[in-house]
Image (cartoon, rainbow, N blue to C red; front, side, top):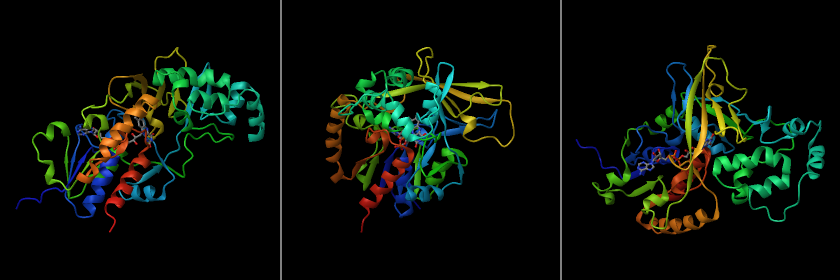
Length: 376
Ligand SMILES: Cc1cc2nc3c(=O)[nH]c(=O)nc-3n(C[C@H](O)[C@H](O)[C@H](O)COP(=O)(O)OP(=O)(O)OC[C@H]3O[C@@H](n4cnc5c(N)ncnc54)[C@H](O)[C@@H]3O)c2cc1C
């Protein structure tokens, strides 16, 4: 007996593609998922380092956090979760300060003993300047915490990470982790913060583990489509780069990438927190991530794995660069993509929409799209 033809084609086995695949498969559709990489889970992919038993992310640290009850309930179906609250420090001279900047960080940096939000506001008010229309990251930082912290933490970091002056970078980038007027040292404040047992490798594996789903890895859609008839599919969901789909007709959208240099160190821990940022130009990397903090091994071991992150323009497209040139190009691509919807072709996910989205957003948007397209 031949198997029924798939009616849904999904390009990309990351969280966006996997969520739609799972929803359609569970609703009875036949789903074909293609991914050009040799593994599933997209950028969330991680693996267990065999020599230490430490779980390591291949494309940068991935920490799950959400305020969405719907997303939280959904991900419970596929894996057990272990609580994890992320902490990030920033190295300024010999000091390690909390990120986001909070009452503790301001006290340490300025050597003061402010006690509460009111005192912190009054203290910073003397250092900041009012900016009528906050547009850039520079505007935001200068207007909220002032020049000294801006220069110590944000100015060079932005140059290193984005190769842009903070005055050119949208305020939205820095506002993802706004300044806090309390002592909350956590990086995220979401209601649910956890990691899937067995990693994102297992989570996405379980999502795609359905008899109606066929997964084809190491398959580039653009090569594959030269040999296959797309009209056999009722719907196509594309989570690859939107400009590539249109053969860069309006120009290339810019992405910042990262080179990860992994190192093993023979000591229990390398640093105090899961991530330490290095804004100073004395260091060529921006951040050191230590994976052991995320899934601590059950047995004490004198070994740990870190990765140093070196920003670059080449390599995997990680961060859409939020500046005017790219916004204008994106609008053109969005208009072209919209015209394909009547043919049943949809763009989603971080590459398909050219937006930095967190994992919970990727899942939420895929769930919403499924609901919208399948309203009775
Ligand atoms: C360095 C870094 C750290 C991050 N950390 C966090 C974090 O801590 N917490 C958080 O919530 N989010 C984090 N994110 C965001 C998170 O990675 C995304 O939310 C998530 O990956 C989005 O899933 P996606 O399926 O939309 O995209 P992706 O994971 O990128 O999946 C897209 C898939 O499509 C495939 N593909 C592309 N083109 C083709 C083609 N032509 N043919 C076939 N396949 C193709 C790709 O190979 C890829 O597997 C981070 C992102 C980065 C870059």
